[in-house]
Image (cartoon, rainbow, N blue to C red):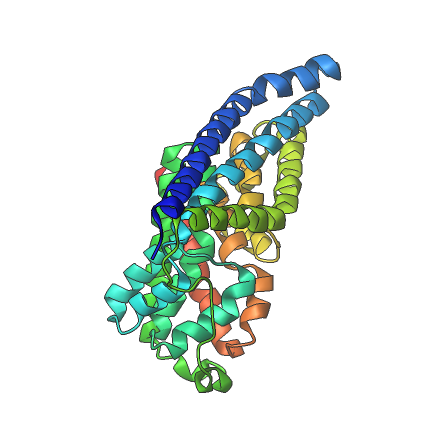
Length: 350
């Protein structure tokens, strides 16, 4: 039983953390609002580059987008970390276990958006879901949605490209996860899961379900920032560098001929190019921003982005530990067809 002095001390600690959080958010906004003037000053005044030059445009893009994307990542990952302290992987497994496939596919896709996931956790998640009684099709709906439509990608898209593209990305990504998982469930492919998977118990994954205090959730969110940003910042910088090169050196309208809606082969080509790339949503979004700015069609760019995130070759290698080659081929085929459909659809209507 806690004493009044301990409760007072805890309340004081919470109040201090909240005050510190408010100050930190205020400082974040003050710095964020000055990024564009600083980038212009750095490229055009300090370095003396001409705004209309290729190098000047590329340097300004890189100096502006690098801190902008990283600052958005810091803020988003922290608040998502607070959310994830409530929505644990173990809780997700119990929610999905025993659900009918049609309902389960929808629920799994939506839960995939807010549940921790990366390629390295594909195997333990798959094992945990299967041994918990989650149907194979429902499991795939989750595994598709979790990396493809993650909350970091949504917020970065919103911050860089606006709410319309972020909403389109969310709706189409979740739809692919639902339909692809449902189709794979209808194919009865359980026999193509490696035999040893069904013979083991689900291991630990993520947080346990013990009640956490506000301070513990705060520290968990900070740990998420250190872990996630620490793992992805290199990909972000590489992606921004590629985007800066496209922004500065690719002629206006050039990509419209290669990745425009008039070239029927642009969508499948973008998927083929995207699959072997090893990056994540945070790293590919600056490239998407630059491609759209140079005239590439929205559907083609979305197809490229989705293939990079949902069908990356490294993830397929990891999944081979638990899936037989035929099931991996079906997974790639079904998801790939969904991505192609999205690409052609948006090229036709937008």
